[in-house]
Length: 316
Image 1 (cartoon, rainbow, N blue to C red):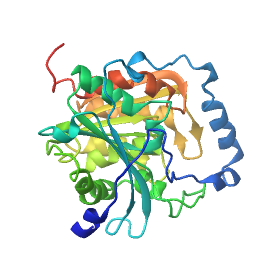
Image 2 (cartoon, helix red, strand yellow):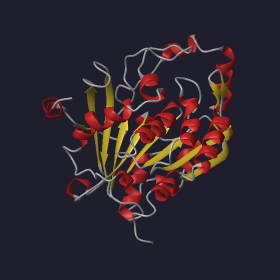
Image 3 (cartoon, rainbow, N blue to C red):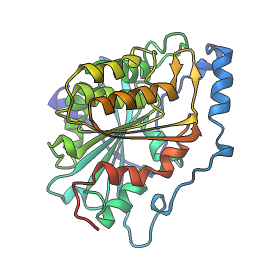
Image 4 (cartoon, helix red, strand yellow):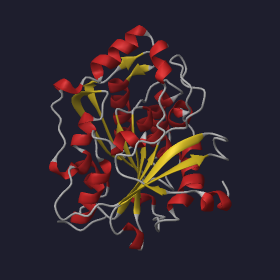
């Protein structure tokens, strides 16, 4: 990454329903084990879900909307030549604020969509003063890469989110944070930064904070894939063996989440919960009834952000 590249990056102001180049491994359907295909079909059926979005996830009268930017980013250091579609959301007033918190969402368009409506949640909670001024970075995985072991594919999602290393955290800090700083004054306090993700993104979020707690002090994981895709099954053991790190962790899964060739996600999340409790982390594990979807996540997303930032606002 160079200052020239950051300066040349064009942030396009777009509507909230903008759908850029999202990573989509359409050929996976031809390579997944049949048992896993059936498992995902059952687990992702939300028709029986008891979870619904609350009013805090809908536009409120008197709450101004923010600005939504889209930009294309080609990595030149951590993932050379790999291009991603990235979005930046600035709630009303963020550009004038002396310092802003940051929420990074992996598989970003899943979070700006109807399941979570993360940008609207930010608008409402910031406006009501229930969380500090917080901007959102919504990252979509690299569009070219080796795909997944066993499952196949042709994107960089597995490399970025499932690899247990500090690479993705370095990519965010060294390559994307400078772009954010062209628009707002980003806090340097890791307690003011939360990294969030679903499935592989949940594992990637935890991995980033675990390797760089100096940059990310909070984690939100939804149906986190702490299973053996590219080694995330080792994270609970790593937590137990390392001194406790200054990370606050909220993670969630459900009874109908998947049991696939890489491992069992409900069991893996229970294992991580036990490891976090063993090391006395500031953590919250929510185990519901849903499957491998963002349905439960969206229903409790406002509550989750309040819990993450609970000591950064005055009692209401």
